[in-house]
Image 1 (tube, one colour):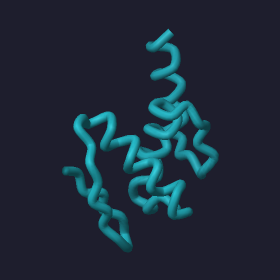
Image 2: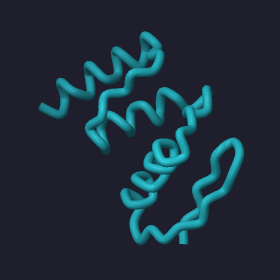
Image 3: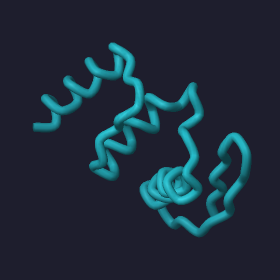
Image 4: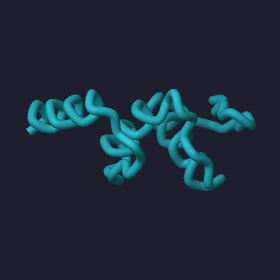
Length: 76
């Protein structure tokens, strides 16, 4: 059993692995048309890009841009 907790609700779901739970977390934001909480936007944006392969179009900090550039170069 996994619990996805957002700013406004809790969702109980079945996820057998951590990657499954992360996918459920990200999917819940899409399904319920929620914005990422401000203090987690960079982290969730990173997961969105890396796990789902969907470009994060939200506001990106300079540190986020540098981190993504290094992450991409290290993973090639």
